[in-house]
Length: 270
Ligand SMILES: Cc1cc2nc3c(=O)[nH]c(=O)nc-3n(C[C@H](O)[C@H](O)[C@H](O)COP(=O)(O)OP(=O)(O)OC[C@H]3O[C@@H](n4cnc5c(N)ncnc54)[C@H](O)[C@@H]3O)c2cc1C
Image 1 (cartoon, rainbow, N blue to C red):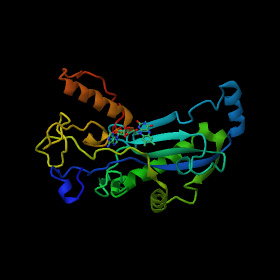
Image 2 (image 1 turned 135 degrees about the horizontal axis):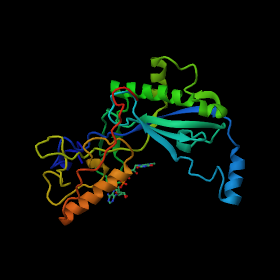
Image 3 (image 1 turned 45 degrees about the horizontal axis):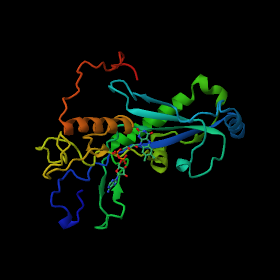
């Protein structure tokens, strides 16, 4: 790790510790006319079924924010309840929410060791919302969520908007809401970027070997060269599977004809 701790960095590479690219999400919520939670709880407890017997987080979606965006750049999670401060604050009203955010954030952060004591947690500075693109993308997220919440299908369940609240309308007001309320969605990556040895920001080579260090590989989400357009678990497993093949010298699994969805209305429609 590139620590800035002097003698700790014999093989420091400029890429190390840089680019803690991560996803950030904001919550928008609406007062709701939903079944009471205690009724749902009884259904789960006694029948192991019913509307409450779900993980509650299985509804989500990826959308393209505007025409011309080649593949989805916004992710939604829908929650049929209030989740405040990651569940640390008890629910206060019957409401529903979406957690929404751009999946290809452009803000770049860093992490470094706090001290020479390996027990100390590292210092992580994500630098959220430090680019104009991220601020604009978040503004779009808020506007698109309002558009979805205004759909006819949600009319029977819709109460007044709790968050950001109907008083938040101008771009400036939306930006201030996002800055005050958005927080981490737990998907840090790219702190140990993979690249060609000629790339001064690369930490591992395309074989997952740490550049400049013998017999050391990194195989995890940190070696992603750029942030993926979604959650990290599956691509991290794919990296691990691929690295296992590389280490064992197995032939590359490569099907160049895998079909990839291309929107027919790319240029004209979201
Ligand atoms: C709260 C939360 C929710 C998430 N939800 C989702 C989700 O819904 N979907 C999704 O796709 N992704 C999700 N993620 C992201 C995903 O879990 C991670 O991005 C992914 O696990 C990263 O894999 P990794 O191998 O890079 O790191 P990790 O899974 O963190 O693995 C690192 C491993 O290294 C071990 N380790 C650390 N230090 C040492 C050491 N010094 N010596 C030996 N071992 C060590 C740790 O114990 C750990 O087992 C979530 C993450 C969090 C935190």
